[in-house]
Image (cartoon, rainbow, N blue to C red):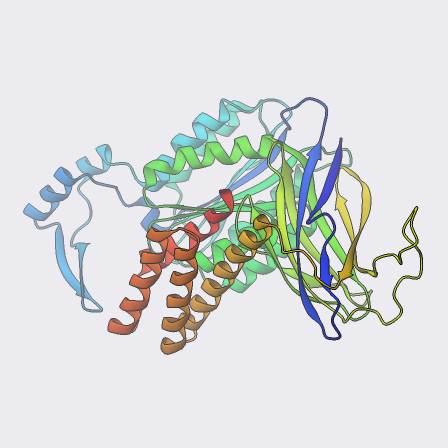
Length: 466
């Protein structure tokens, strides 16, 4: 098994200019392997067990009954009419209306049937405090797993939510299931429907997880969670970020996470970029399979060297990155060698960067990114131009939401309108309309809509799947 790295264009070309210029290159990472296999998993699920995750999810008929009996009343919050429970939910309704934690337990019961002796599983519940319900356990110990799952909906850990405590316990349990000859895919799946204390601590833990080879995937449920935190956790560690509007989708989302963990071919892939003198890294964006902004970290020991954690490489799912570099002017002393078999001077060339791939499953490999200089370089391939347009839309959206969070109303409106224009150019008319609707809401009310921002955030990430 080996990892393949290819550049697009295969021979990047720049103009012969005396000033710096922007260089776009697609970097495609894929796995070359004989046959296929299902990898064992070392998996931890961290479930938000706060009060909101326990509220029964009623259908329309049940809701109308609550209204008739005075158990639900309409109130105004920030000028917006919403329905709130006036009394505790009747016991008989609890029996027939499942909560988000009920759906989670159902999903885990199904997952247990798919685990075997090589798999490891842990379950952590968290709210104001965190508790280990299933310590790191072999998949063959089904009795213990089922007993731990049964504790989930009956565990009461306070009214507030501190996801960092749960993530920390989950990572500790994963470490307990690790050994010197470990070949497991290591995943932590975080499920929440609300806000958390200490979000910065969660991001610190994600960086620690990435260093340990653990991908953190997140499931955000409903309209009240922190999408910037959940997508950040996934992006830093190389996991997936999923938005669910309906708790009924929880079992499918958890099953998909297990299936993708089993399909991993190369674990914990990272990319180191050693830039040549005069070269500057502008930004690095993952285009496929998810459109996301990668966290690029400077080397603590080597100047002009940057590292990014890509995550696991799955079977049949290549990873495509858009590398944007500011290249220096064409070297004054062009290459003096001659083209093979001719008398014409060789094309001036320069190595912009040396890229090194690392993984837990293979030795490091090094690749040189070399550009040529021409008086009239060819146009960029359409696939590169399309990737640049998608990356630009994603970065504009990030700036827009940062402006919203910083209270810059005018700047956020302008950026959201620019995002809409970019999305329209990409043929994403529905998503462009969402961006314009959020800009209009911000102008009229001074704030965006919670569901609209989440839809924009997560749907934009799916633009890399095309």
